[in-house]
Image (cartoon, rainbow over all chains, first blue to last red; front, side, top):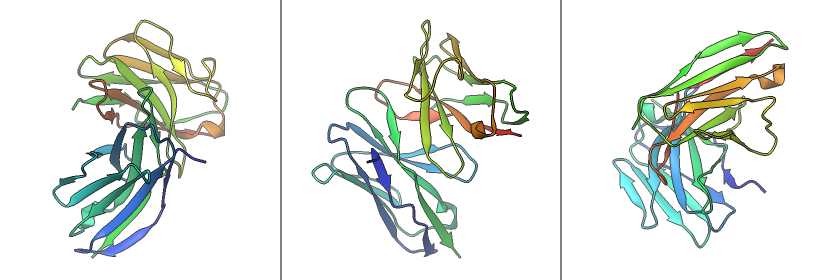
Length: 110
Length: 114
């Protein structure tokens, strides 16, 4: 079983729509969680860290459910520029290493 | 954050040759990492580049194939040796500015082997 699993999508949504997707992780001792964004043929860029209480950054909301071992990302009022692959990233508790999901592709259409 | 530069940004190489990729950071960092991202896949950690000691390699990656240097706290190199078409990939370096903080990535090196 992979350490981090994501629905690959693609999620095709119109501008202004809300889109949400999840990521599950297998190691219950995982400590830190992040969402990264990766545009086509570019490097991953940190979108937001995910905190236990959930957190919001503008149109983006991240939630963590430790009991069920999943993380979610919600994008409100989608923009064309939100089209990208979103990577779920988990840091193990016993070291600094990161485990990456394969990514969820979102395409926002006009 | 930090400015992380990789060179070259892309290259096309012949089978059997070797290429060294450089990663330069504009601030001193303890932890530097090298990843590979094969087409259509997510990132896989190759090794952790430690300053003053040998790199720590992940399962499936060996020093003879991917030698790494870390001469100081702002610079590292990854060499892809004796390349084959299976090594065609994006190679990324990343840094952790402070312990426990998210990693930040260089702009990547796109490598194609003919």
